[in-house]
Structure formats: C-alpha cells, structure tokens
Length: 141
View 1 (cartoon, helix red, strand yellow):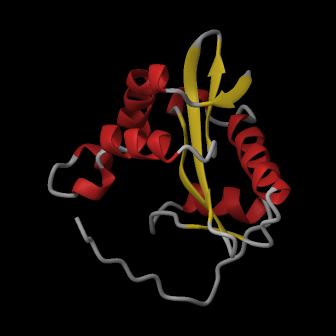
View 2: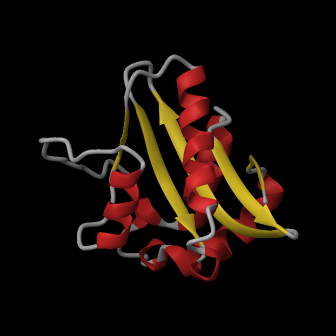
C-alpha cells in the first residue's frame, strides 16, 4: 500500500471510491457534500493535506485534513468496504496525524456520522474521545 497526495488526475478515482464509501455525497439536495466540487475545492486550496491510499494502482482510501493554526480536522476519511480491516485506515490516520503534528497542530478534531458504531470503535482505539460540545453548521453557498 502507498499513501500519497491526491492530484487532479486522481479526481475520477476518488469520486468512485467516495461513491462506495460516502453515498450521501451524491445527493444534490445536500450540495456542500457533493464529491467532485469538494475534491476540486480542496485541491485548489493547495495546502497538501489530502491523501489517498492505493494498492496495485487502485485507490482504496482517502483522508483529507485541515489546519487553521488552532486545531486540526480530519475529513472525508474512508476506506473501500472491500479493503477494510487490513490496516489501511490505521496507516492513513497515522499519516494525517503526523502531517498535522509537523505543522504544530496541538489537537485534532473529527466528525463522524451518528449511528456508526464501528467507526466510533475505530476512533476510540486510535485514542480519540468524544468532546462535550455541540456542533452547529450553516450553509453559506
């Protein structure tokens, strides 16, 4: 397995991975989640905090991160269902955490969809805890 930065040339492969991992990213009623525009915006931002895992030329996972000087965030973190429970997610999370730490990031946050106990178990095993906060959101575009 190889973990490397996502490039524009990877867009179609990442879209197809996300179709298997994040089906809600294809609902036009929720435009802030649409896969292709999200990929294009992140690549245009150019912070280098977007990686994929590939195995034998196939994209098997992605992880996107962000850092604003205060906190780091993990986004769009997923592994193809056929590739799960093989260490791909652990390796990708460690890669993102190391990149954020190298930038001086003191704390990493992430959101996960409620009702996904396997993801919760994974994050707890990786040292994440539930913060006592309420997340708000507002679409501006």
